[in-house]
Length: 182
Image 1 (cartoon, rainbow, N blue to C red):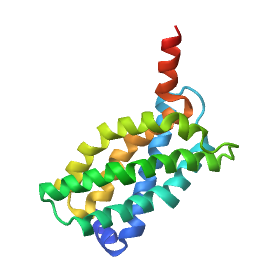
Image 2: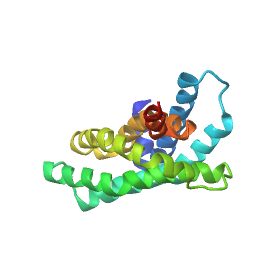
Image 3: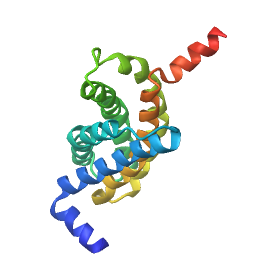
């Protein structure tokens, strides 16, 4: 089975990687709803996460990983560091913004930037701590053919965090405001 999957990744790298990433990302949203909420699963939200992952995030990250490998080839520590810095400055804010704004658009929100404004900086601060370690391992130790899958597995945890923060709309910034008000 593993041999078959590897053959498909090599034969159809874009499709298999985007489908893999989108599936894992979507599973993260389902896990977040099941683990962190007692209520019924919101299938519309999960559908929107799946569509966003397949149409935007999966493609963005697949192309980004290809560009990073082309611009800074190999696993030399200096190139790994360059890739990670570029990730944090370019693709991390783009991915976060795409998630919050994209979800608001699909839900037909009047102000598609409202949730983004409330949660972006809190999310980005966590991303600056979370993603560099993941990407150092990814760029330094994981073979190129498996990087998107490795990234997707960590994206599972990331989407649990982002979906939870988004559903509680005001995120940790609101918790801080409420705590200070007491």
